Length: 214
Image (cartoon, helix red, strand yellow):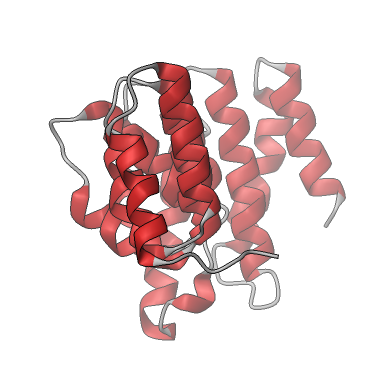
């Protein structure tokens, strides 16, 4: 059971992050801060995403994902086009939370980020979006944009990104299966094509496995 911490206790944990003098010390401090699950620590965790400390950044990502929706607005407000590292970690957070407010950033990352790990995370995130959070009129257009992006991702030169694109298509299909929009059959047709033509067996197999569940 998570115990409620006082403002002073939270402040001391934030100070521990700011004053950490080693990579290990920073990692431990970020883990302790994340464990509080207090929205007051969100700005500090976001700041950690911009540090040159992958271990601490992973811990901050995990903490922000576990806090969910309250972290989305501050992340979107803090995304800096000049700090690529922070932006790439932010994509991972938004992909993990699945809030559709992150749609634009996820689409941009999936389509054009130069790092395959970021494109992969964004593609998976697009399949993980919680569409019920969007009003109905906006939902159909957003889903159609997501479909087009994922179809593009499935042509990516890196097979791990294409694999993530298939996973994203499955997530999108599961979200709309009961409604079956006009493009639903086209999605299935694309998966069938991938299962026959992709040059990597893992991608073909993942497509077949997805189709077999329908």
